[in-house]
Image (cartoon, rainbow, N blue to C red; front, side, top):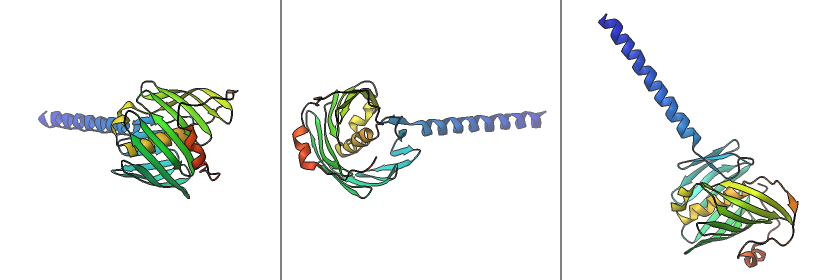
Length: 210
């Protein structure tokens, strides 16, 4: 009788441990979304960013790995973010005060962004953005080549606001290049607030094809 009871308790203990391990693995695998799921569905879990064709690791002062077909090797401090995305250079200038300013080139793509805790506005490549914080993401619109896209929504957890400015700059830019194009209606003259003047300085026809 005692032997049977002990065998039963052992089996139940192992079953409980197995369930707990499985539950933990599923929780770790889920993470949080980053960017637009209709593009590359990226998941952020701690220092790892993963997707069907992406695998990136965030280090203390940089990021490395692969985003879609591009190798990524980035380094940052409180003033700039440098490195490469694919075969093209990345050099972003960073400024932090009442808001966060990011401008330069990401994988050869011109970038000029301002984020103030409520609004994320500016340009990435040929697209202008006006996005407002909504929960764990941003929602708003963008204009690409005279075509307006409404109800753009990208995931960017509020907790990321506490990470170093270089890391936030890399993640914000990655988030925006990870939006799938879905034009709605053509419109001219849409411009985000500020920052557009500097874009001519960084124009380059050799963009990474995200």
